[in-house]
Length: 147
Image (cartoon, rainbow, N blue to C red; front, side, top):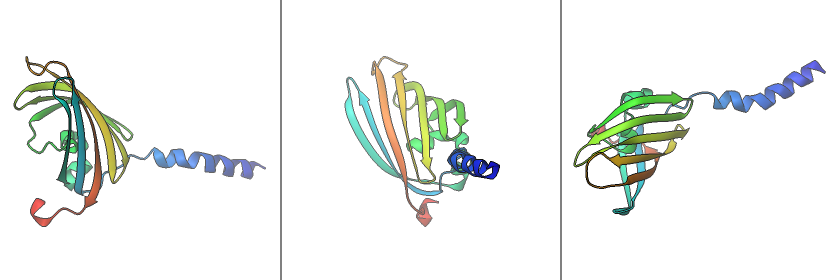
């Protein structure tokens, strides 16, 4: 009887034990999609392919904005937090205009993630919030020239 109860408990708890393990994204070429909306600018959809190297996927805290396709590192990251497969951070970008806000990412598996972000202009234009929903899907190994 005790053995049966232990087996049942183990079977019921197994999914929780597996899901508690932190996901590590697979290095390689990723297809990224971003849908941004703003009350004045409207809705814009962008897709791009990026190579995520071993250094990035093994230490997402070093440069999490690359998950969003930021290759130029124009955005500063603060308050990075990882709780299991949930990531969040504050971001400030200074390119054409100064924006600041927060980003949340959920790692779905080693080959996919999704997230959302909210940014506000620190300057005069554009007033209001810029909201983004994004996702990434592993596509293949990186081309030799991209590594």
